[in-house]
Every structure is written in structure tokens, then in C-alpha cells.
Amino acid sequence: MASSRGAGSQQVIRTADLDKMSLDQLKAVKEQADIEVNLLQDSLNNIRTATGRLENASAALHDLSLRPQGKKMLVPLTASLYVPGTLDDADKVLVDIGTGYFVEKTMAEGKDYCERKINLLKSNFDQLIEVASKKKTLADEAGVVLQAKIKQLSPSS
Amino acid sequence: MTTYNGQRPTVEGGCQSGLRRDAPFESVKGAFESVGFQLGWTAVTTTGFDPGITKQQKKNEFLSTALRELQRDLENKANDLSKLQKDIAKNHQVRKKYTIQLGENELVLKELDLLNEDANVYKLIGPVLVKQDLAEANANVRKRIEYISAELKRLDGSLQDLEEKQHSKREAILKVQQRIQSHQAGKAKA
Image (tube, rainbow over all chains, first blue to last red; front, side, top):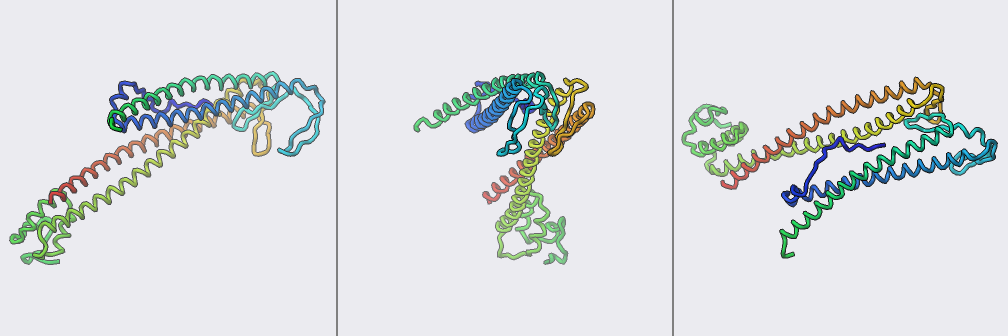
């Protein structure tokens, strides 16, 4: 789930270097930074969605634990077909851990699983936000220097 | 093919054997040597010596053939370069996919490690949930992780290879471009 961008080349560009660059190079740097910022924003959105889904799952689990055994319920067979049934054992839950594997866990373990996943996602989210804000400041700086240079080159306009 | 002084012109002998009265050839020889195109020799010798064609025209004719050759060469190299770039992009995509799968499998392994021996593990095969042995599931996931890591390493190797090829193609293209420029400069002067 953690998107590692460490594999790519991390170029640290300072403001002093930006000033030395030509117009074309600046444009290239700004475009590159913009693309990266967009990618990071997409990743952040994905993490937010995933966290939301996990929190829903956690809430559903909690709700399920409150229901007594033998309670009548409607079981969804398809998106539009529900079948009446009774709640059997609310203590055992099947958890999807990925790549097609499911594990039978107790209610407590299931809740714990959700909690762990949510925490993992939150830490990834925080890390990404740091990186994204750094890239954004770089993109903004490049944009500012670019505009200043354009103004310099065409003072009549 | 015309003969000069009873001798058939050869690549080396063409200029020395009995073409004395043909001043044009002497000056065109310089142009040939500067570009080093053997092709030029046969092209001129087979056209024969028509006093109507000036030495300048012959030189230009020769230079434009050479120019066309170079431009064709440039086109070929540019096509090769774009193919290389497409290959590199595909490599990146496959790499991304494998990296994601690797991450997922490592998560699964961690979860499986946390389980007790007696916990039930099921695998989703198509629409069927099949009960699996914990040890077997562990082994499967570990094997998959190994396979994906090996694939990633292989992709890394081929990516480096492709990048090197791309680099050398770029240099070759630059050289051809420089030659074209010097040609056009020569033509402009003429």
C-alpha cells in the first residue's frame, strides 16, 4: 500500500540553482514538479478512500458484535436480492488479508486487524503529505522564478 | 560504363588513370575524400564525362546524394530511439505492477505470521473459498515473494541495458546531425 517513490532519482534543487537555469530548463522543472505533485495528490486520495473503507468495516464489525445470536437478518445474495436468515455465530469473522487469502478470526482479532490497518494507512498518509508539500513548494518556487524571468525578458509586454 | 584511356575506372585508379584532361574530376575528388563516400565514385564514373555538366553541378549532385543518405540514416536512428523509449516505458509499467504485488504479498505474510497454528486459512480460487493449511499458505506466499523479487531484479537488469542503448543511440544521432550540418554548410558555400 505504501507507494515507494524512493526508487526514482530525487533531485534536490535549491533556489540559487533555479536562478541560474535558462527559461526552457525552468519550464521543464516546473512541469516535472507539477506532474509529481499531481501523482502524490492521487496517492493521497487513494489512501483517504482506503482509510474510509476500513473505518466502515470497523464500524460494521462493532455493530455485528452487538447483535445477539439467532437474530433475524436479510442476507444479500446479489445487489438486488436479499434472503431472510438468522445470525449464527457472530464471534468468528473471515478477514481478507490480500492476494486471495482469507483468515478466520475472532471478533476481537478482526477489530484489532482493522485498527492496525487504519494506523498503517494513517502513517503512510502522513509521510506522503510531507513529501507532497515539499514538492509543491518546489513547484511554486519554480513558477515564481519563471514568471520573474519572463517579465525580465519582455519588459515591454 | 565509359572507359578512359582504355582502362576501366576503378575506385582507387579512377582519379589517377588518364583523366588528366578532366579537370572537373580532380576537384570533385577533394569533395569525395572529405566525405569518404565510396558510393560517389561509381555514381560519377557511370555518368561519363559530358562537358555540359560543370564541375560545380557534379559536386552538388554528389553532396545531395550524400545528404539524402545521411538524412535517411538519421530517420532510422530516430525510429530506433523512439522504439527504445517505448520499451523503457513498458519496463517501468511492469516494474510498478510487480512492486505493488510484492508489497501486498509481504503484508499477507505478516498477517499469516501473526496467526496461531490452529487458525483457519482459506484461499479464494475463482468463486470458491478453499480451506488451506497454514504452513502451505505460508510456503505459497513466500514462494510468490521470491518469484516477484527475481522478476524485479531481471527487469532492473534489462532497464539498465535499455538505458545504455538509448544513450549510445542519442550520441550516434548527434554525430549524424553534425555531419548533416557540415554538409549543408558545404553545399551553401558551393
